[in-house]
Length: 280
Image 1 (spheres, rainbow, N blue to C red):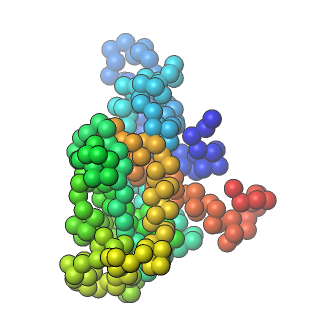
Image 2 (image 1 turned 135 degrees about the vertical axis):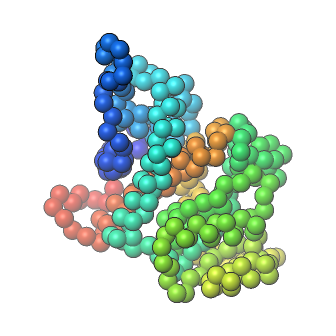
């Protein structure tokens, strides 16, 4: 069973491969020049997709094509080079150019997941009997395309994470003049309203004590994107301990979600030679 369908994997790999530096198949520094060849980057990339989608360990996914140590070393090499972040940015730019990001309407919400392995982003979860958990403060645009996130221990409240989450908007370039941020009742405070006013934004905040379905508004987009993220078992139950590794897997998941939405929406907006008869 493939981790993701080929119509989604191929464009992701084509762009990912274009970001990779050229490496010789054999190490020229080897004294005899006859050691084993370098494992193909495509093999490692597909292994990381499987780890992300199925949540399995590196040892479980290793086989005769490559070992667990090779997967971890190549993953860390790509993280140091910023490849995953670049892939996510290119996916966002492509979506914005072809479909268009709805930056006038933003939604932010926190989501708590399990983190049994502990690490930099783990803390006692208030919704899981004090077990270790991780919180992500996720920001999406009007359709639900993930823009960025802030990782924190599960014990952190949503509202203090609002400012650092909004700070991520600086990486997107100029914003529209009128930006509305949709928030749930956990952000219902004067401090939140002052923070939004200082940034020139308008807040649509659910009121504490009122039933959420009556005031859901545009917040369902961020709830749906949280569900998309949790479909990747690596993010739903994360054993990684280093924040930069977790961020890399989130960037890869964001790129998958964005490209998938781009392909599906482009099918209804454009016509081209070889266009499939049905939307995938």
